[in-house]
Image (cartoon, rainbow, N blue to C red; front, side, top):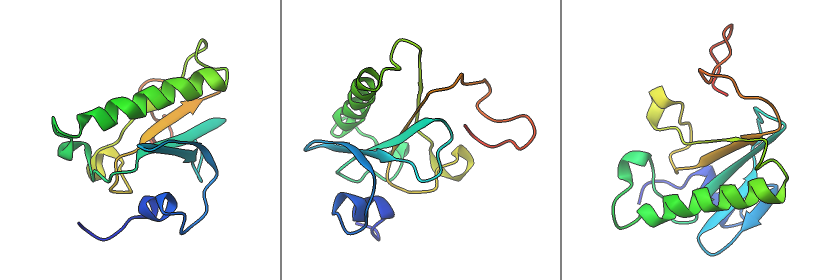
Length: 123
């Protein structure tokens, strides 16, 4: 396996994170650079570098990430108003950590396309 990522260190409790959910397959923690009032990253404990490495054998983990996101949306009271759940893939997709992660963003109205018109920052 390639060099460990910051997410591996969070999973292994080697560095701190503001964890909001954990089970045997996934971990969710607050993003250190939030793009919405509620912004958490939901990651599988088994590392999959990018969406391109999702296979029939590990695809159940991606489904589990979305199930965790839905659970968090309900628990935090924004399931009915709505939220955004998105994964980035590789450099042009905006991925900066090569361990798949689902961004769960809520607490404000999301625009489309998912960037601000002046800075072109992903939201």
